[in-house]
Length: 179
Image (cartoon, rainbow, N blue to C red; front, side, top):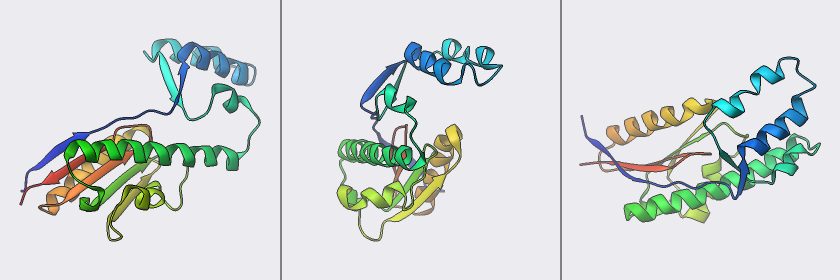
């Protein structure tokens, strides 16, 4: 078995901070009268340990009566920018260029992107035209761990390659295997 090592990790967050108490108040406003069990379920806002969340739009925007097209467009814009920012940091910290990346594993469960996020930003970042792309959708929070597993196995099976793993709402990381 070829050893695989983690070369760098980079993080970024969406531009707008939302305090947990404000998110709880907004959820109560939107759902408090619609669900009889809301009060019991809403305790998660206090017990989760989360104090601040980050979003691509101001909290008020999420309370507007917008449809799927508008909401997914916001996701695409925000997720693509986060992908570029975090991947660029990870590559810089690893001391390699995007053109040296052989495979990109992208995990996303927030919105739907067809073409995938990695395909949308490939030219902005500088990936080669032949970079292998592995978009994974629909795994929720478990997608992060699954992405690590997939990227690690790909790097291990291809000695001397670099695999960039990115997850919307999470940190991209870069791994490589030795020859």
